[in-house]
Length: 486
Image (cartoon, rainbow, N blue to C red; front, side, top):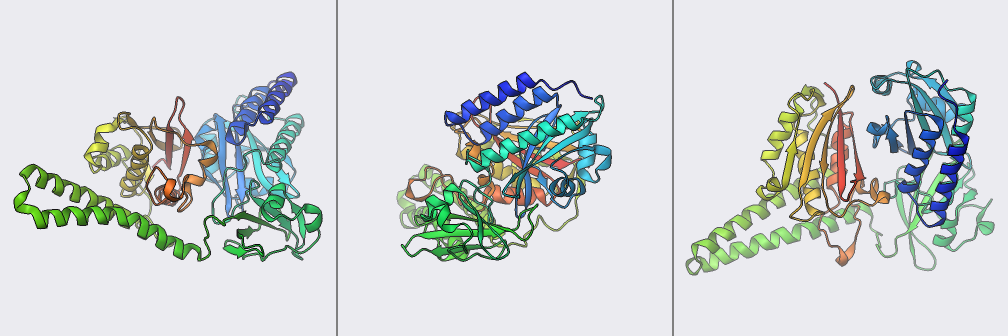
């Protein structure tokens, strides 16, 4: 058995957590605090929490020996995950019972046992909590499973109270309890109606429960814009969640300000035209100046105009490539099967292709003996360009951007870290959604189409890796990319 559970410490950390929630703290700050307090009290080597949506799950919080898993996708059909989602609420599983890549990753770090517990609301699984123990420990028994079940229920309560969770918020189908949410049965009658649903629609729960949903439901995986009788617009999504039986979750939000009646196609056209306009205008302006005033301009100004045209043309080519890749749902990293490659060499080559001003800010610290990664070498340039450009955009010109790399028993990782404005914890997952922007409209301080991180995640996950964002200690953001070892 692991060392006995420290119940006084567990209760103390939980009371402190409640106090933090009562003072207005929310989201990942609270979730991470729960994991840290629990890990110490139950003697776990590491802990993680996976959040589930209709299209699968993702580890959104991880500490200790499982911190490497932050951002990792979780397939609900994996045997261990499927058993946890459908079996007993809390379970102890030996890593030897698992199969596939996850088992190798856990075993490679000396982790031998996993205690998992489901977090449910109204019979809907919204997440799973995991505690990990090493080879030196005996299998955690029923007492540990009970405590994990209690902690998972606490997390579900946090979701139900909309304490800044879940992290996912702008995907194509979202189980976002911070938005309006309804659970409907096979007859499409409402069985759960969260407080946000009352605020969004103006319909109190007593008026809606056990009645047909008062607006249409899109097919799973689709998004529908619906106009309410009062003229407001809702964006509605639906899907079946793991752990449900003929029930569907419907999420909705007020998008009247966005007015996205025409759907994603018009949104794509609008974003494209907006983002292309600036470089095209600059290129045309400087080209016209050179054409009309060549003889009047001194050499220095002609040279400057040529440099600007070249820079803007490069920016334009990159933007067009991103837009086309994003528009093509079948786009891949080139179709080549994953092969072992030298990640350091690929990063060095990609670094040389970055703009000179960005290279001057980049502080590179790469080990000479890094093991090979398994994936697509050609995709590294795209990923590094996107991550460093993002860091450049959101940090001061005088601050460094750091590129580092390391490896563990099962993965090779590289990180791009900046000292800029930082990423808000509630945005660490939304930032990977297509066209998502932390700011919108004419008040946006930072240009961009909201496509870079979306493309990065697609590229990396097609290589069986994963990518995550997190606030950097001391200010700024860390983008972390993990690939399997070759």
